Length: 117
Image (cartoon, helix red, strand yellow):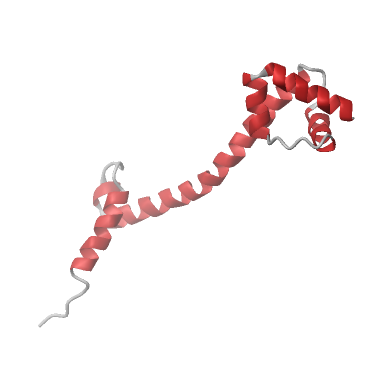
Protein backbone atom coordinates (compact mmCIF):
# COMPACT_ATOMS: atom_id res chain seq x y z
CA UNK A 1 0.00 0.00 0.00
CA UNK A 2 1.48 3.37 -0.98
CA UNK A 3 2.35 5.89 1.66
CA UNK A 4 -0.08 8.82 2.05
CA UNK A 5 1.62 12.15 1.51
CA UNK A 6 -0.31 14.94 3.23
CA UNK A 7 -3.54 14.38 1.26
CA UNK A 8 -6.19 17.00 2.05
CA UNK A 9 -3.72 19.21 3.94
CA UNK A 10 -1.59 19.60 0.79
CA UNK A 11 -4.63 20.53 -1.29
CA UNK A 12 -5.79 23.07 1.30
CA UNK A 13 -2.33 24.62 1.55
CA UNK A 14 -2.12 24.98 -2.23
CA UNK A 15 -5.63 26.40 -2.36
CA UNK A 16 -4.54 29.21 -0.02
CA UNK A 17 -1.65 30.09 -2.34
CA UNK A 18 -3.87 29.95 -5.45
CA UNK A 19 -6.37 32.24 -3.74
CA UNK A 20 -3.55 34.76 -3.13
CA UNK A 21 -2.57 34.55 -6.82
CA UNK A 22 -6.05 35.59 -7.93
CA UNK A 23 -5.86 38.50 -10.37
CA UNK A 24 -2.69 37.33 -12.11
CA UNK A 25 -2.73 36.31 -15.77
CA UNK A 26 -1.82 33.04 -17.44
CA UNK A 27 0.36 30.52 -15.67
CA UNK A 28 0.95 32.93 -12.78
CA UNK A 29 -2.56 31.96 -11.74
CA UNK A 30 -2.73 28.31 -12.81
CA UNK A 31 0.72 26.72 -12.48
CA UNK A 32 1.81 25.79 -8.94
CA UNK A 33 5.45 26.77 -9.40
CA UNK A 34 4.58 30.10 -11.04
CA UNK A 35 1.95 30.79 -8.37
CA UNK A 36 4.54 30.36 -5.60
CA UNK A 37 6.94 32.72 -7.39
CA UNK A 38 4.28 35.33 -8.09
CA UNK A 39 2.83 35.35 -4.57
CA UNK A 40 6.25 35.43 -2.90
CA UNK A 41 7.42 38.31 -5.08
CA UNK A 42 4.15 40.18 -4.53
CA UNK A 43 4.68 39.82 -0.78
CA UNK A 44 8.18 41.26 -1.04
CA UNK A 45 6.90 44.24 -3.02
CA UNK A 46 4.04 44.78 -0.57
CA UNK A 47 6.44 44.72 2.40
CA UNK A 48 8.79 47.22 0.75
CA UNK A 49 6.05 49.54 -0.42
CA UNK A 50 4.32 49.72 2.95
CA UNK A 51 7.46 51.49 4.11
CA UNK A 52 7.89 53.55 0.93
CA UNK A 53 4.33 54.84 1.23
CA UNK A 54 5.14 56.47 4.58
CA UNK A 55 8.27 57.99 3.04
CA UNK A 56 6.34 59.35 0.06
CA UNK A 57 3.66 60.96 2.21
CA UNK A 58 6.27 62.66 4.38
CA UNK A 59 7.95 64.05 1.24
CA UNK A 60 4.60 65.42 0.06
CA UNK A 61 3.91 67.11 3.39
CA UNK A 62 7.36 68.69 3.45
CA UNK A 63 6.90 70.08 -0.08
CA UNK A 64 3.51 71.54 0.85
CA UNK A 65 4.78 73.11 4.06
CA UNK A 66 7.83 74.49 2.25
CA UNK A 67 5.63 76.15 -0.39
CA UNK A 68 3.31 77.63 2.24
CA UNK A 69 6.15 78.93 4.40
CA UNK A 70 8.10 80.42 1.49
CA UNK A 71 5.02 82.36 0.39
CA UNK A 72 5.13 83.91 3.88
CA UNK A 73 8.81 84.85 3.56
CA UNK A 74 10.55 82.11 5.54
CA UNK A 75 12.51 78.96 4.73
CA UNK A 76 11.34 75.48 5.67
CA UNK A 77 14.35 74.70 7.87
CA UNK A 78 14.02 77.95 9.84
CA UNK A 79 10.30 77.27 10.24
CA UNK A 80 10.84 73.77 11.65
CA UNK A 81 13.62 75.02 13.95
CA UNK A 82 11.30 77.81 15.10
CA UNK A 83 8.50 75.33 15.81
CA UNK A 84 10.80 73.41 18.15
CA UNK A 85 11.93 76.65 19.80
CA UNK A 86 8.33 77.84 20.25
CA UNK A 87 7.41 74.42 21.68
CA UNK A 88 4.70 73.82 19.06
CA UNK A 89 4.21 70.08 18.63
CA UNK A 90 2.33 69.81 15.35
CA UNK A 91 3.50 67.06 13.03
CA UNK A 92 4.12 67.60 9.33
CA UNK A 93 0.84 66.02 8.28
CA UNK A 94 -1.16 68.42 10.44
CA UNK A 95 0.92 71.42 9.36
CA UNK A 96 0.33 70.49 5.71
CA UNK A 97 -3.42 70.20 6.26
CA UNK A 98 -3.43 73.47 8.16
CA UNK A 99 -1.61 75.25 5.33
CA UNK A 100 -4.14 74.00 2.78
CA UNK A 101 -7.44 74.08 4.67
CA UNK A 102 -6.91 76.95 7.14
CA UNK A 103 -4.44 79.54 5.82
CA UNK A 104 -5.39 82.01 8.57
CA UNK A 105 -4.55 79.44 11.24
CA UNK A 106 -1.27 78.66 9.49
CA UNK A 107 -0.48 82.39 9.46
CA UNK A 108 -0.89 82.43 13.25
CA UNK A 109 1.52 79.50 13.61
CA UNK A 110 4.06 81.30 11.39
CA UNK A 111 3.71 84.46 13.50
CA UNK A 112 4.30 82.46 16.71
CA UNK A 113 7.42 80.95 15.13
CA UNK A 114 8.66 84.42 14.12
CA UNK A 115 8.01 85.78 17.63
CA UNK A 116 9.94 82.94 19.28
CA UNK A 117 13.01 83.33 17.05
